[in-house]
Amino acid sequence: MGTVSQAGLARSAPRLAWAAATLLLASLPVQAGLFDDDEARKAIVDLRARVSQGEEENKARLAELTATKAQLTAQLEQLRRTLLEMNGQLDALRGELAKMRGNDEQRAKELSDLQRLQKDLAQSLDERLRKFEPTKVTLDGREFTVDPAEKRAFDDAIAIIRTGDFDKAVAALGSFQRRHPDSPYADATRFWLGNAQYGKRDYKEAIATFRAFVAAAPDHPRAPEALLALANSQAELKDARSARRTLEELVKAYPQSEAAQAGKERLASLK
Image (tube, rainbow, N blue to C red; front, side):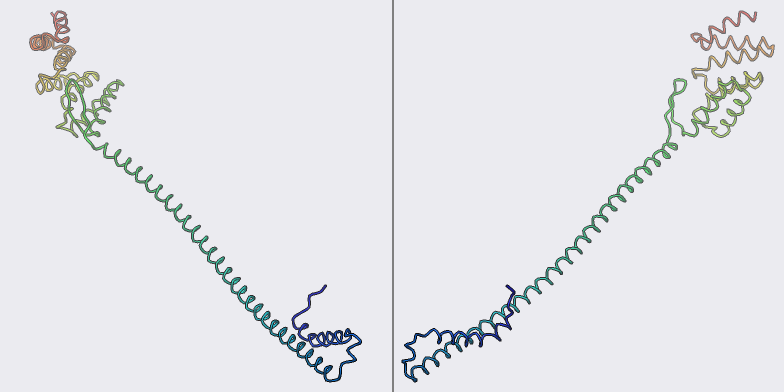
């Protein structure tokens, strides 16, 4: 069955009431005709009053239902708007949270990058500082500290001697002496310079260098070797007399050294 609107019910209510009254009158027993006219009129009036009262009650109920419906409709609309606003606020909060989460991740990445850069810089700085920090060196039984650059220059010069390029070695050791006149390597530099000069057969320079070495460091562990090399340089120059004197000095000054033993054998060959 189709739904009857409230307005339709209101318009059809009088007709329904009269129809009900007519049916009621028609259903009265035949004996109703025996009533006198006054009683009939009174019954009709009472019936009309009840019908009218029913109509008023129906109208009032309908009006109440209509008002209630309008109120509920308004409340539902307000609730719908509230829900829409709340959904909008939730979406905005989700967006803010996502943005904050993204910012946190970005900050964490930036912090990690900064820490890695700081570590790399600290390591690089340490390496650079290490190049300038004094380095402890033990050479010929002696211990001292030198600048890293000074150590590299000396080591490079000694490496050249090992290659047999004595001309280049003499140049490197001479340059080292000029650049580091007060170096802890000074004695060792003289000794190896004399050997490089001997290697290039510059015996006069070798004699002068070895003599300067022994005079400056008579207690040096390589002093006996220097005297032996000095005697050999003199012998190469056919100066046997000077060579013998140098060997005698070696045997007398450093009798327990291996160089002194070799000097004794060399003395025998010079006689």
